[in-house]
Image 1 (tube, each protein chain N blue to C red):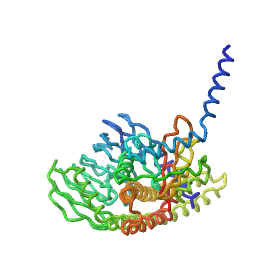
Image 2 (image 1 turned 45 degrees about the horizontal axis):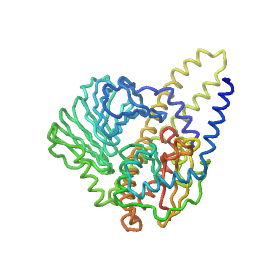
Image 3 (image 1 turned 90 degrees about the vertical axis):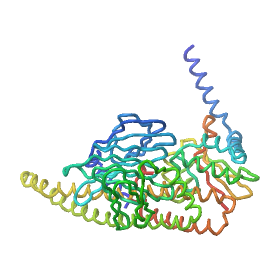
Image 4 (image 1 turned 30 degrees about the vertical axis):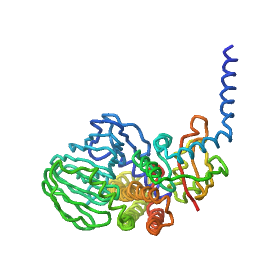
Length: 339
Length: 150
């Protein structure tokens, strides 16, 4: 199985090495790094090009402005922001993922022929068209989306909420969006909000980790579905390639026609379907690394003198279940460079 | 003359490598434990490499490194009566001492320097494992910690 995944990565990389829209680093302050799709981390430089699978990491005191097409993204300190692609309704969609931390997005009004752009967090998906809005991704995996201009649709758990100017919504991992609230422009502070999330986590860590498990289960379900569809397409591709290779040398014209009309569209379809497999696998990895990992560090270090306590062991029990689930269902879709 | 100087340089360099003995490696790990017991999170953050493995978690952000050491220090964490049981170089199965996951395997393969060492420390609370650099210049660089394992 691992072999299949690795060969797929090579195959897909031929088709999807560049993010649909031009993306680059425009302005930097402090410690900002870029982690490329090979997993190598280098100090960011203004003008750096960004591609699918790249992450921009703003450490404490860091700040970055990047452009994706005509969309400006201001990335605050302690934030990990990733560029991904996904096939959505037969169309390749750019996904901007605020994995942890906070960003402000200024999305220019897009024309019909432009590639779709979506903003995701560990717990929510946002659809936008010409708007300014903030996204917070907290240490417990909760997201907050607040609109300053335009309209944003926030989806989670099959429920969609539409946010207008100065409206916000919070989404906990594995749950549907909460109630909309008034979010006055410039009045939201990520640090205060995140401190409250941390307090909630400390008050009830077992419920918080349970939510992460639900979110991961949901991602795994989508990952499995995507992989099944992808496998079906790649098997069909293999079959059609065998037919292609069966053409004799004197059937060059028919062979070319068969390639153009049958094999090539299948190659494109298969590579696009693989984007979804990668998208869900990487989303699960982000949840595991930046939300679950941080929860574990907080819980263990705070309980270091009472590791036999009931709360810690209840937390640990769910944590171990998540790790087992992740190892069994997600890791086979990852490559060494992702880790 | 030049040849003689090059030879001398090579001999001195090799001598420098070989003088980083097990005793010195042991001392470096005891120094790290001493910093932990003093609650010197600032120094521990400086000495910790990113990526860092804590139990089976891979730490990739400075923020999380601060969280780890500041929180341990704030909780009054210490390693009581530490005794170094053994020091070993990293081999292909070493990751299993930290975690059985493929992630752990990748971490050991990808992020540890060639001469990194693993040290087993027993204490009143249980066993700890430390991943550190195995050369004089990196002996105080911490790549990972696991424990207490009871």
